[in-house]
Image (cartoon, rainbow, N blue to C red):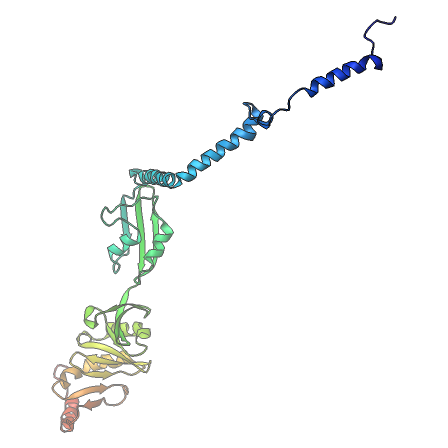
Length: 311
C-alpha cells in the first residue's frame, strides 16, 4: 500500500528551500578569534600551549644563563670534590724503589701530590701521565707506576748511574756508564768518587777508563788526578802534582802497572820532569823536562838507572 506523507514534489519543496536560504543569509560570519582561539584539549595543547611553554622556558634560561651555569658548575665541583677527597679513594702510602739521584720533591711533583697536605686521590691519579713526568728527569731512564687496592702507590725507578765527570766545551758533565751526559756540575771536585776525564771522545771510552783506574796499583790510583783522551785511541794520566804519564794505545794497563812497580813517580818527584812517555814498552821511558832544565837531564837518567831501594 502507498503510505500518505509529505509531498516531496518539486512544487512543494521549493518554498522550504527558499525559506532556509533566507535564514542562512541572516547569520553573521564568525571572527578569527572564534575560529582559531585555543581550547583546553589535546590537540591545542600540543599545537599551541606546548610551544609557548618551551619558548617561555628557553627565554627564562637565556636571561639567567650565566647564573644558572655558575651555580651548576659550583654544585658539580662541590660534589666532585666531596667524592674525590673521600678517604676511601685516598692514596695512603707511597713506596719508591731505586731512587738515589732523583730528589723526593721531584717525585712528589711528578705525582701531583699536594706539597702542603701530602695527599693524593686515586681518582685524580693518571698513571700514564705520572710516568711520563717522571722520565722527564735526566736521571730516570725508566719508571713503573702502580696503585694496588690497599691504597699504596708503588714506584720503581731505573736511574742512570754516574760513572765519571767529563769536561767538554767548557762545561763539566756527569756522564753515565754509556758515556751519555746527564747533568752539568760545578767541577771535578763535585764528585771526588768519580774519575775526571778530559779530551774529545773521552766519554765514549768511560768504561775503559774505569777499568784502568780500578785495576791500577793502589798507590798509583791515589795519585791520579785525571785521564786525558788522546786521538780517540789512548790515555794520558795526569797525577796530582802535575806529572803526566803517556800510556800506549795497546797494553795501557800493563804499562801503568809496570810504572807502579818501578816506583818511578816517587823517584822523579824531586826532579823537574813534566812527563814520562811509556808508549814504547820495549824501550826506556822518555822524559820531558821543563824548559831551562837540561842540566838535570843527567841526574834524571841516573835516577832512572838507580835501583829502587824499596824493591
